[in-house]
Amino acid sequence: MALELKNAGIQKGGRWLFRHTDCLIDTGEKVVITGPSGSGKSTLLKSMLLFEALDEGSLWYGEQQLDASNIASYRQNCAYIGQKAPGFEGTVKQFVTLPYTFRANRNHAPQPDEIRRLLLKFDFSPEIQATQFDCLSGGEQQRMCIIQALLLRRTILMLDEITSSLDAANSARVIEEINQLKGCTVIVVSHDIQWLQAGMRKLTLRDGALFGREA
Amino acid sequence: MEHTFSISPCMLAVYLLILVVPITIFRLLHLRLTRSLLVATVRMVVQLSLVAVYLRVIFRIDSLLLNIGWLCVMLLVANLSVLHQSGMKKGRLLLVTFPAYAISVIFVLASFMIVFPLSTIIHARYLIPLGGMVLGNLLRGNIIGFDRFYTGLQRREYEYIHYVTLGATRWEAVRPFMREAYRAAMAPQIAGMATIGLVALPGMMTGQILGGSTPTVAIKYQIMIMVAIYVTMALSVFLALVASTWVTFDCYGRLRRTFFVTRH
Image 1: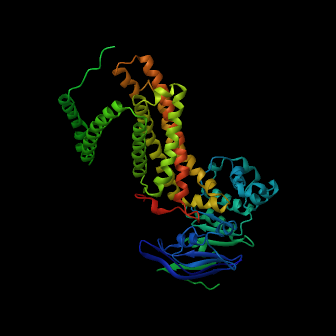
Image 2: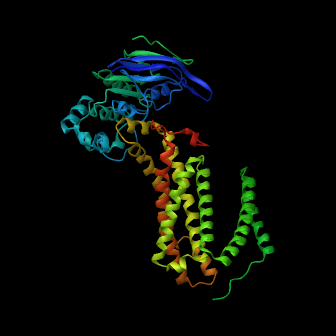
Image 3: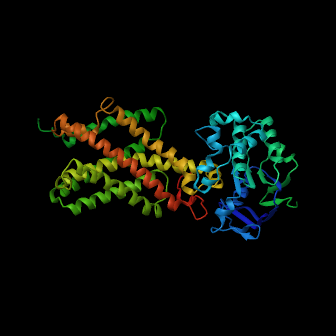
């Protein structure tokens, strides 16, 4: 289903970060939101999960306007990954299966084959599952977050500057793997040139307005 | 045992002059703490003098209702102090944290009935100092707990959102932050218990010995109060943090930033 912000606006400290913003993102589409630092890119992304309150306008998922009553079920379609992976004490296997310790997912634990398949897809050896998560590099941890989301069959990935702390080679690998994901809507916030050259639809947030909105 | 030597007020006033040592160091370091130190000292002298007057009255009347009332006042002051020092706004937060602290203190005061008969514990002479010790020590752990918990949630909001989108309930998503805050609040207390008597003589024991008790009596009280303080802290930090999340998050699972005074 498509995700749509209609006439959305958020103000911070008496100033509109963005206003009268319409943004339609189709199923399976890959979009990169860019713009100068402080322009409100991350806020815009979080508003697509309603983790930032809209001061005006609304967020729609398909035909449904999102509010407190249906936000939890909508978020079950999404995965949000920030600049850094969460701190975690335990093995890689425990990390990727962490969501299955949550009550909502307890009965949906993935098959070991599924984990192996995704690890191979992301160029990891299945043996890495026994490694301590905090021994992985930043880039590897970020890719594990993506595996975690794909195991849960999340269909909307929201990635907030996830390559900002990675070197060029690691960034390129993460971008390539994300770009190849089929059937997944991906919304990336970044001003990294590598994302901008990755062939995704580019939206620019500048001076409180979103440009380049046509698909 | 000899009667405790009474310090004369004049000599006590002269004694305060040794504060010139830290003030000199502040000056050398160009550290602007002198004013705060002087204000704190004056507040301490005034507050303790007033307490001495109140306690004399309370001990003389020795009414259970008055004792409970006094404990409630101490509880409220402790609660306000925790919220203020950890940079939180009061209001609705006070409504949920006050019962959390009250439950913790009532539980621990009730536990004293294992060692004291009820008729003893309800006397002002026992209830007020024991309650005061427990409450006074509750402050530090709770300030650390609140500060760590909400600073962590604000600085690493992405982690919280990450967990929520992976299907975590609010409790499941804040649990890593709570674990971290709880560890920070409780670890110094464990370290304190492990080194007590080796590094410093604890205050209650010292006070009792100066007051004329034998060291044997004093250490039994000290062991009991250390355990009581630890349990109160463990219970109060946990209950207050959990209770606070009932009001600090809105119906969308967003942290309400209006609750923070001095966050950056």
